[in-house]
Amino acid sequence: MLQWEGLIMNYNVEVKTSLKKGMLNPEASTIEKALSLLNFEVNNTKTINIIQFTLNADSKDEALSQVDEMCQKLLCNPVIHDYEINICEE
Amino acid sequence: MTDVSDVNVGIIRFPGTNCDRDIEYAVNLVGANPNYIYWNETDLSKMDVVIIPGGFSYGDYLRAGSIAGITPIISAIKEFAKENNPVLGICNGAQILGEIDLVPGVFIENENAKFICKSKKLEVKTNRTPFTKLYKKGDIIDLPIAHKEGRYYTDNLEELYDDDQIVLTFNDGNPNGSLDAITGVCNKEGNVVAVMPHPERAVEDLLRSKDGLKFFESFLD
Image (tube, rainbow over all chains, first blue to last red; front, top):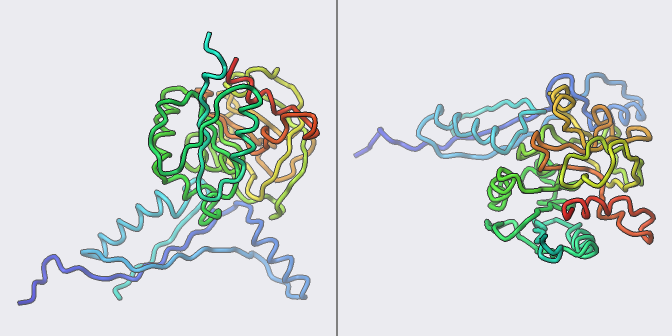
């Protein structure tokens, strides 16, 4: 018999971390300058780190709450980073 | 008074730490007793001082110092610091202290995105810490820097001034773009100190400068 209650789902998770708005991003400015050496003139260059993994959880909310805790404790430094979490069922 | 050879200095080793033996050399030079303590240990009860050396703990993955910041020894270091014992983080050690919030702010990628390795003139801004006690406020000292993530940043600069938490500033220019040229800070109590320059690399004339020696003599005073 299928038991729907307590069913564990597998979620695909993607965490994007970036420097807070207005913070100097030396990597991005170096890339922008290098592109200019190749005669590509671009503006507002940003770099964003993406961390992907799968996670078992009871619900999407439960998965989100776990990933948020991961961001607070390790994946980001709240002094300098903003983060965005995307979760979908596998 | 305690004999200096009874003073136990814990030197923390993470995978990727590489300035540990330089610290051991400096600790021996002032006559104290160096002890290596590993990332997975949890006992600092026999230590009088803890020093977190420079290097590239965990390959600087994620952010410099972030993974070292969640290892078992960190809880012991937090406890040790809470009891007002002296803790010094140098370079990667300073980045770790910022990551675990024992000092305010963080050390992030240099303004020019380059690894900078050179001797710099620095100003000692406070001598109320156990590692700067023997300097005079305003002393100009010559220490080497060697880092790519050393740009000091905090969202609460005013508080650092109000609470006398700035330990070192660059005196001849600002090579990495740090806020107000700050390159060493301490906690409010003053017992936890984080510095990007390397005092252990300036402890005898052969090393071109011995201006860093007082960092090690100070905690014995």
